[in-house]
Image (cartoon, rainbow, N blue to C red; front, side, top):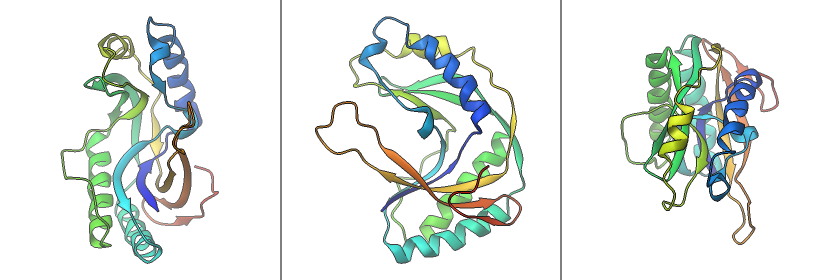
Length: 196
């Protein structure tokens, strides 16, 4: 199974961002981008390659400890940027050092569970709102999103998410995400269906 650790913004934060993204969709050429769905918006902490059930069970215990070691912290979605012309994203502000520590702990938890990880690189908090195919300049979209400033919220949990890739050949299909574990920061456990 494909897994990643993430922070899921609350509905209030994604609603604010959705309003800003709606305006971006009115810009010339926007119909040529693949816009991500609000139901899948997240701040990835650590992306894992395929993991079997045993490794996932070990990972869950390690993520629980990582969450327990991290106090809740304030965060807000703010600004925008791009990774070349491949991805358009909203950034984060607030206690970004705490977010980076949580990402580092999630990455370490996965590695200690024996799960293959992406190449290690500096963590850059972002929430992907659209993907390009490298043929459209995402600069104007990033500039338009740069002034976005969302309302702060308190990050209170770490979520383990399972990713289901879309089937090939289905136009407009997007990945589907399922929360398979939630751990309250500072201690505690929630089941997959628990609210944030």
